[in-house]
Length: 166
Image (cartoon, rainbow, N blue to C red):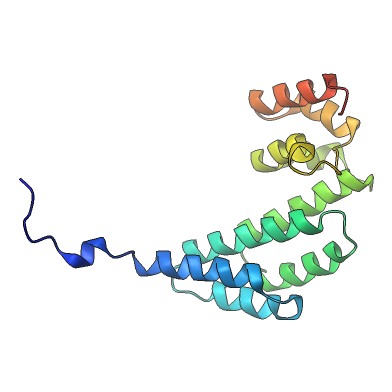
């Protein structure tokens, strides 16, 4: 039976959902010089899971935008200091730095790639699809085609190697 007098509080969006949306909006618009302070403020939110989620989205957006930009290094260094002690966020920044190294032809090791998270391995294989100016190296694709952690990664790397744009 339908309640004829529904509780209006049930129709309201939870406070953490509103804060999450507000954080994402603020992080997207933040000036570079204010980024560290804003990220630190978000991470002080009482809902650590929500705060981490907002910050990882920001990290992913900023890193993708700056991947081949010389500003990537200083931005990543600053964010690494701000997120110190938060293992997931620190790992995500490290993996973006590895993806940058692969994309730019900088030094990296097979162990770094094979030990990386599933997220990283998928990202390494699909980077060119999202950002046409960046292509993972043939060496990285070959490594992931053979030693990728999941069948999805191995198959995607194999397909990329077979395509003329890989």
